[in-house]
Image (tube, rainbow over all chains, first blue to last red; front, side, top):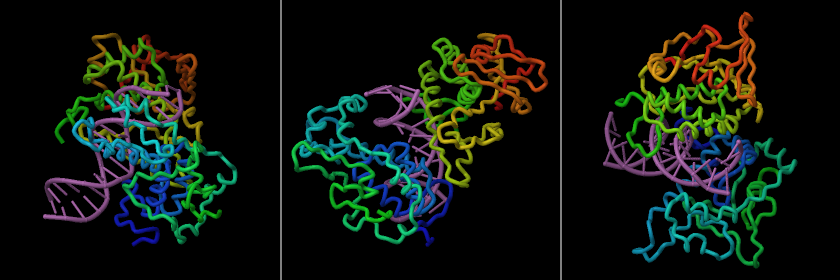
Length: 198
Length: 198
DNA sequence: CTCGTATGAATGAACG
DNA sequence: CGTTCATTCATACGAG
């Protein structure tokens, strides 16, 4: 009902993300961004502010919660002793390396915290280069982004975490940075965001 | 609306500090305590045990977290964006003794990373005798600290673990170490106010 | 209104 | 130490 987006209750007690904001965040998450750095959070929030009020901590919490809940929701199983399918073990399940699904499967985590040690947290390192141009871009979100279509090439499918972006060519594991996704820098696939003045 | 002190859930899986404990810890932090030594941690936890169960590692973690989050502080306000966080919900949020937060009267100017340096810690000059008597004192805080809100001149030396302050009247100029604060040895001034209004 | 669910917010506990 | 994980609390919203 508001001009900003389809939010209903304008209760200002806690951040209520708009659909556009959720879109962007979800896409970023699906693209592989899981733990944005401070600068990334800053830029993202600045960018999201074009769609409505948002603070940095909101972005931070969003990613934290999203990641935690994705994992927690998928990880309800103990061992795979009785269940033939242990495919739910794929906490991240996004940009791993090629077809290697052997991430955690071969190592049933006894303790959650222990399992994290073996986690493949390095596989999906977002190489983000702090470029000035991108910086300036983030600092000044264009107002036109509100009107243009965001992700025309992909329908954001929530709860579908299993997206493999990297595949194909040998060991050249293409990492996806959030700049790639948002700023459209050399998009690994058709996930290009043609907005944001690039 | 049931449990008064401390926590809501009686799930003792992890330490849930009581409001009194948090008050003490916060005051200590504001007084300048950032990295208590083992000895100090021991002492603090001993004192805190008067308000509920607590271990040394809890105190250790508390200071670690508090310090880290003081720096990180996802409270980067954007332009004139007010309402950073109005009320600090106390977990329990009960009306036990809903005192007015003697919190900071001056909001720190959100300087990106320098904010932590300007940690305007109010001096906590509550001195305790020693073991036994301290407990009674801690449990019965008299609330008269409000008056000595801020000192005109105050210095904080991180390296030497000391908080120096100078009274406006210039009667005393003394430095308070952690032990002075925690163990309360030789209070410089007569402001023996055991704050933690409750 | 109450309850259940989804999720924002917070923080204790650790890891690297 | 900075960063991340895990758990919990609080709140918004839809169903009944």
